[in-house]
Structure formats: structure tokens, C-alpha cells
Image 1 (spheres, rainbow, N blue to C red):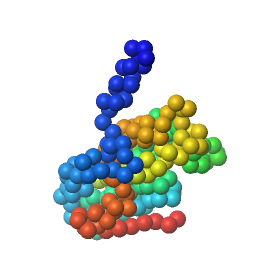
Image 2 (cartoon, rainbow, N blue to C red):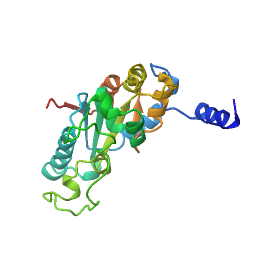
Image 3 (cartoon, rainbow, N blue to C red):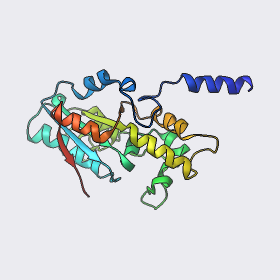
Image 4 (cartoon, helix red, strand yellow):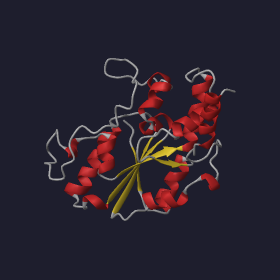
Length: 226
């Protein structure tokens, strides 16, 4: 092994993979304290939105929930916590652009843009409006009508990432030839888990995390069939 390959291998080995490298995340690998601090932050109302099938219009529903809670029901903006529980194909909302590009995520999941071409980056991430807390909520170009992940996070959205979903998808990515030939499923999973969108929180199993959110942190549950 030459020096370049040795250094690259050493860097990979030293990288901390959120949730560890097992298919089933172990208690010792789960940062329970960080999870509790994020999902259990002070809030007057909490909601978890489960997303499995890939339906980007779901982000509009999250935006509408935030608007309704803030402007209609009168909850202060800082007292609202909404968690996006994406797994299955919807796990990809939390994947950063290099992952979408490297593993051809749009092609892998058959996710197409308006022209029918595979989506090649996380087009759902970047905010389109300026952050202006005084904006008119009726303004279609203002922050309160911006359903991007970044803007929703700015307003209280917690983006959860399912460790199990990533591990399962990594195996399928390798077996179906969407990963470089030299990569193993464990390496692909580690690559994904270390290249998530800013603020994403890795949970061991989304279906388990939803139960904890409801039972321990009193999140109300919503899933959308569109």
C-alpha cells in the first residue's frame, strides 16, 4: 500500500460514523443524550410527520402545519417542534448533494424532475426566501411560504435520519451497481451517514424512534397519504 492509500484508509478508519457501522445500531453507538436534547427541547406543542413514500409535497404540509400553529392557533414560533421522520425512499431528504451525485440517488429511487430526468442533487434543501420574521405570511415569496428544508429547519423542523434505512439502502446500492466497484455496503453506509444535511439527527430505527417521540416526548403523530 502506498502512502496516499494508507492515509486515505487511515482517515476512513478514524471517521466517526453516527450510529456506528452495525446493521442494527447498538445502544453504545447511539447518542441518546444529544437526541434527548434536540427532540426534548422546550416546546408548547410537538408533532412528528412520518414520510415513507417519496412525496415532496409533504414539505408543503409541514410548512402549513407550522403556519397554522403559529398564525392561526397562536403558538409562539419558538415553542413549536416538528420532526420529519423520513425513512424508506424519504430518507433521502437528509442526504447531502455529494451522496445524491455519487450514488445516483435519483436514478436509484426513480425520482424524476419536472422534465422526467433523474434528480441529481438535494433540490429540496436550500431556502428560497430571506429570513424575515416580520414577513407577511400571505406573501408567496416570503419565508412563511418557503417549504425548503433549510427554511423549515429555521422555523423548528428537526430532520431525523434512520440508521436502519441507510444500512439497508447501502446494501441495495452496492448490489444493484450504483456504488463504485471497490466499495462495500458498510463503506457506502458510512459515507452516507457522514454526509447528511446540516442539522440532521441519526436515530437507530425510525419506527422505534416514532414510538419514543410519542410516548416519552408527547409528539403528536401525522402521516400523509398523497
